[in-house]
Length: 204
Image (cartoon, rainbow, N blue to C red; front, side):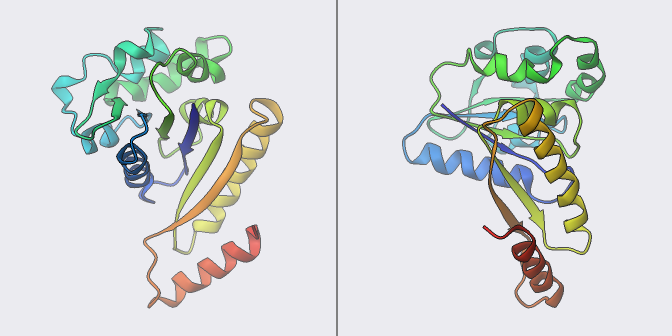
């Protein structure tokens, strides 16, 4: 089972769009995919066709109430794709997880019990708090969507420092799969300059 996190602490950079479309594309190839909605806004859950009224159990119940993750997964509107949904209750998890021992590994332990999935795609919230740390501690690899705008590189540097800390202390196998330049407009000179800066900074 391959676990891919989609993360960036900045909001509005197309994390959810990226996570939903990657999950759907892999599922379309005939592989079984579980989409984990780790954002309290719950947009990834809505994006694959799960209404708020259908979310009896959510990722909040998995992380905080210790329920089996398999009882919190639901069929989506896409064949081969299930979703473990989120709702606004998840916003309280940041505080509640602080009281739990080994809090950074709760999601990793839950995913180890997940059945019938070839890939897990995790849509992270726009922060570097406990939820994102749980995702990075559980993931094999990371995709970083990055909007082509002026402050993007500053935000990226904070995220890369966090990834470095996670690799050293929590999850040595975590690899950056790539940086995805979102909202890319070749007609815009700032877009072009951001792309040049990212490529020169990160290389391969």
